[in-house]
Length: 358
Image (cartoon, rainbow, N blue to C red):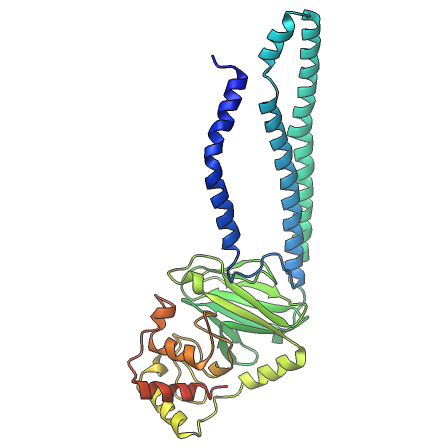
């Protein structure tokens, strides 16, 4: 039988073969963080701050437990097995061997009781108390009815409704900074999950069920959100923006969004409006103030005022908008919008019209 020293040397010799794979795994993990994914620990609201604090508490407690267990494992590798120590000392002093074994037994019993019962109980009580405290802190505060927003998960974009103000937008949620806002969440198709890491935790959108969540941004800014539940082919590109504005700016935005679309005055834009109706766009999209009342796609009444296209996939400019209309499948394969059949001249006219929808 091989001695303990031979087994230990063999173990470390074999584990050296795994180091390249371990380094590749660590490098891949580091590179995966260099994406447009919202920051997980940059809390910008009271709800996110409570969740982040709980996460760090759990992380450091788990790290401490891991290091202690790792220390015991390393100790087991370094120390010789008891039977080897007994064989070594039995030849010299039998009484000393029995005394050492009794000491080791008592020490082992204390370690088992302390590490297997007392410390785990303390950890469980701390985690339970911190979790209950966090859940109480996340209770929805009193919120004015006018600050209730309905969010509907579509394939694969977000419909955002302001029921008190009677208008809808898409993929952008405007809120007043420093004030809590209530979100009523639902889904029109499959299960989605609403998540703005900088402001709040996750909440599922389940077909046939209505859930609610509240958001509050401490400061004005733009906060990126995403769908956190696999919902189909374009799950990874189902993003949105939460735009927190000073109260006065938010009020002006609400007033502007409640207005119907302005009628085009330029000849090219008027031609573009005609193209919009003749190409069948009205079957899927709504433009308030016109005969376009489609519900399958986003409301386009004020599409030119939005920051992004395709559920925060593209920056909203004429070049990206033209590419999106021509072939949305290029930027978002599997989206429900088909490629357009309009000519180049008609596309330029259509872009001129859509750019007036401020």
